[in-house]
Image (cartoon, rainbow, N blue to C red; front, top):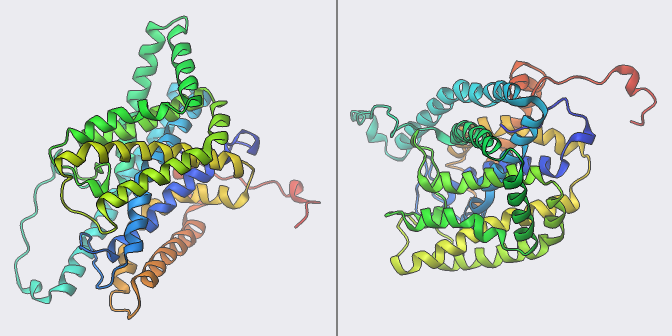
Length: 405
């Protein structure tokens, strides 16, 4: 997790980025909670009720949610590197990213398989008397990373970023190349053109795919240890932009001024995409002649959402907030454990005689409350909290005296 260093004083925190980091990860709870309430079915637990509005929530949030996360990941990765150096950076990332992935992958995967079996038996009890299908062996091409794929991808992007940084330092000793890149980024951002350049690799990767389930946007690299080209292009560019944004933090002011235009453009492009595919999940590939137009609109929407949301957060949410700081720290734990909780609650309300929207709210809010409670009681001040977000230190009693309650 690209969490800010927990011991950093408020003056050194990027409060807007804290909000975005929490929002991007917490939105994942609603994103996965909605899967049970769509038609056609494609999820582990499939409810008999559905709601097109939930499909819209899934579609729109999926455009920007993980791309925005990787921008923030790149931003905070460079911040951490500047503070701790290469050795400290590597040690921190091994502890905060590699260790949680190794620790939580197996129990999370086991829980998903268990609910998959339970849901299948509930839908067809006769399966209990039939032999289970053979389990395919785990290979590099067949490895279910589950929703923890983002940790694995970060473990690829970090060494790539360090290698590129070392290479640039070697060939650009005077800093002329870096200065040119910084100026180009600033100029194109002011002109509103940087999104075109950042979108190009993902656009090429998407239209080059023989089979692209276009309703689901960037193909998630969750079933293989070898990430697909589109995911590497999309999330890699997002990570790189976040890294360069930290180099020139004054560019946040440009995004602050541009947020209304960027969000208006994001809504327009998203509207076109929804008009093209509809609110119901599509399990087919995009038709040939429509592929270029749809892919162009989709990738531009990705970056318009990113620029608009960063600018909005800098404009209105860039002040210290104990609530957002708490959620930002808790969001890592919530995201790690949320999928088994979502599946459990989706299964629990299968027979509830209620509309899909009500079940969706029960699953979403219930997951958040349970995850927050476990974070506070079991994680925040224990060894898991130290691994995920760094050791928490309580303020000295004297420092609290005289402060208003």
